Amino acid sequence: MPAGTLYRGREGMWSWVAHRVTGVLIFFFLFVHVLDTALVRVSPEAYDTVVATYKTPVVALLEYGLVAAILFHALNGLRVIAVDFWSQGPRYQKQMLWTVVGIWLVLMIGALYPVLGHAAREVFGS
Image (cartoon, rainbow, N blue to C red; front, side):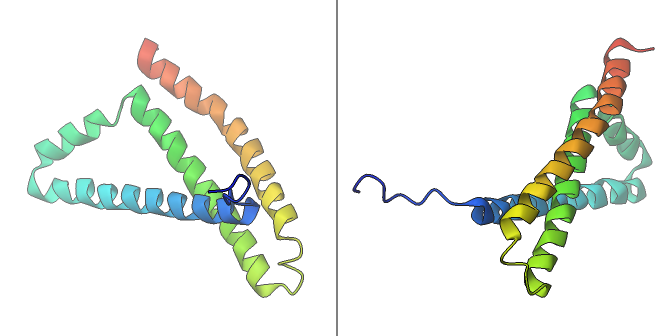
């Protein structure tokens, strides 16, 4: 392949990929959530055991990742709606993407403090 011919994508493609990946992650969470909740009907003891495994620092960080995925998916979904239904949407899609990323970063950084505090309490117990 000649140098310079490999397509590396632009903002629109990467936002499309991120939107699909976050959608799959959210679906996976909902699937696991339905399964573990249904477990209470089969065996309340098994349900208690499964729920107890969720009370770990690793799961606390995974929950932070879930919030990150849901927030990005929602904000990017609003951008996709604007691109599709606003006559000037395609023209400003790149600026709207960077606005979504900026809002997402500010909110996720703001949400980091409680998550780290929760993880620290789980690890060090207080």
